[in-house]
Image (cartoon, helix red, strand yellow):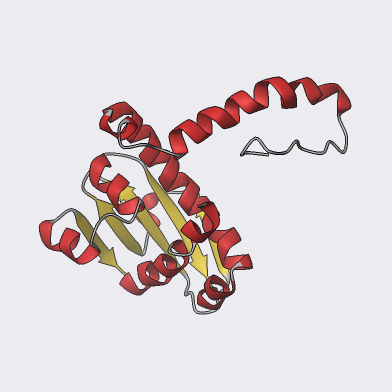
Length: 169
């Protein structure tokens, strides 16, 4: 449906089909515009910021589903420990991820409860990081990334994050 090749099958609410045929495609088109960037679009600072925020939020919220259904990610889920991982862009947005054995959830709570933090220098670095264009060790050495706390938590969640591109390409 999101690729424009199929229509949703309504199970109830036939009176609301106007939304599905008129308004919903506009929403999905706008989301696609921001989630499928081109090099030219990424040159615009405002677009870059919105794309980065959407990508960060989408990746974080995809974690529970990928962990549940992907066999390799599921295996990693069995080895997760109790903790909270904060992925944050300095002076910008971030996500707090609650973890435990076979459990990942994005929570809207105080970020100071994080047991592990990954702080990313700025929006351009965050965008490159989220799109796999940053060498983590090089970024750490240059100060583009900072990692604090229970780093094994970041390592485990990172293994699950690495599985996400398989499903969105």
